[in-house]
Length: 337
Length: 134
Image (cartoon, rainbow over all chains, first blue to last red; front, side):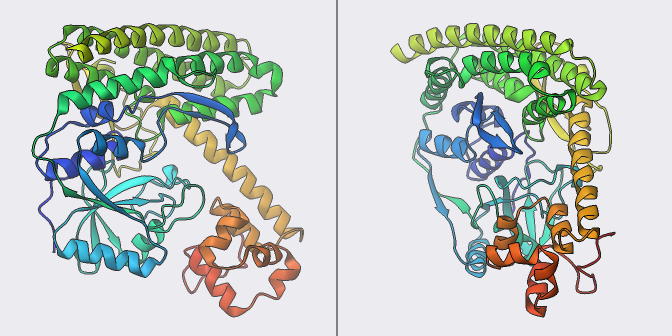
């Protein structure tokens, strides 16, 4: 059996799965809207949290955060379950599918059969949606794939119980109930407010625009601290986090700009559209940073250019700060209305 | 990023299985969606990452051949795991996994534990776990 479900692609799997589930239930929101309401834009560079032995640079909130925020802001009743027993988890999914409920699943991508080989790491917070079962194979709507995919029972069981960091434990979710009227405007303002808070208000040197400045300082020191090969490795990790599959490009800046544009027409505030244009420029700066960094990584010997990319990051930090400060003014004005 | 600036640098990272979705502005400044087959900086860092992994894997293979570790160690590294993850995937106690990673412990591996490891590492019944050249 197969649920009549419209497969939708998205730049980011978490936004994508929420968006298409909500679309199925009649709430037409774009990916950018979901991203903005969930305050998907974020930055942190925390030296004590390591990934592959290097400090983790994060361009996104903790996996699952966007989902939680969006369902809370729009007052959608979502049922989330985790399981201890794989067989039970699969049975619960079967029951759901028989009832005709499209069901979101959190899986690890390392053993995911249809995933491109180069992207298979032990990343355990990928979101997919099961929409049916045919000949013993599950029909999967994966937001980052162009078409529907089919997964055998054993493979789905394995990826749902992937191990390691953030093991999903068979996590499964679906929309149980919707409120009578949805306050999208309020949710957008709430999302903007949270973004401002996270990017400029929160104290400490490692989060938000100050985090970018901090990263700039560290990048400047790479050639003095590390051998060229290790420095290139550190730089590579930053670019990977920025541009890995499902970021919408340039560390989500374009996605956020698209959101600001939509919010501008929704809230009838042309100033937001101006900020959207500024954000697009900042996204281009991030891209330029990635291009330069890519060159350094490839050549490995142009040590002097670490200074220039550190300057770029510093510039980005300043520019973004200005945007969020203006955004803060707009949010203040909007919430007074 | 303008719509016509969306990069299309194909390095076969996505293997033609899918394309990246990119947000870009059209000539009127409105955001649209453009599909992309890849972008050079991204390809470079991904390729570099896999080169490093393969170097480490070759090193692991040497270590197995010189008798420092057992073949299980090589397979664990090939699947980018550590012993805790392998223990979880296979359902074998982590102390035992540690033991099995040594040639001495590997020699004492029971048939059922071999099955458990093979299942965890997605190996077909015909494949030999002591083969490290595959």
